[in-house]
Length: 90
Length: 193
Image (cartoon, rainbow over all chains, first blue to last red):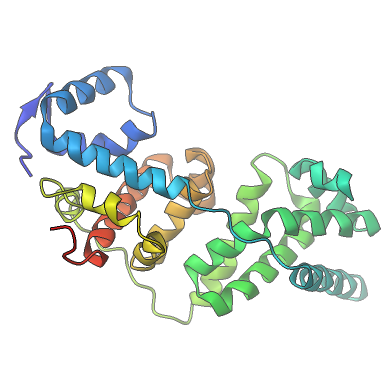
């Protein structure tokens, strides 16, 4: 990694460190401007940032877990009822 | 029962706290609503067999603790925290692996910086690639990716569930994402080169 190369006022290593906050929209405005300027002038960081964003987008698009079946829900409710009864008795 | 399915989490917890017939119905609605996500987190932290036990124990903990729920955070975050506590107990006997303290620059290189980083994204187009990649991560990194990126918890919620300060949560999340990219590249073999 060309970690010492400065583009837009930031090195590639600094951009790597900011990448998570950049994607999550949590960078301070002045840092955001610097990161954008760096990425616009650094092909390696632009490509890497795109791949990082694609991986996170895939995570966010993960399908919902399958619903619990009725038997499992009934079993959990029965366990709670047992716990409640035990608490009253105890 | 349709009313309960549409009730807010906080309203359901208030009903559960009553401990009467309506409370059990509200509890079942909570289990139905959040059970799948809790089970997925439990599976990420333990295994398929223990995950159902963790789910059951955490939900019973929620039932017992409903009256004490103060309502300051989200019910979902509270349930995740209960499940996490139960999962940790299940793992207590197993040797706990530390998260590798890899320098960030090295993680970036392993994730593909400068050498076809898009391979991780290409790999994601293959069926089951994401679950295979996640399985290669330490449980603590799987968990943060699930909470923040898959389940969509806010940064503050995720930090609270994990008992971390917000900056520490962000750092762990970023490193976990990079390690996932590296894992995806590794599991992709040499295809596409």
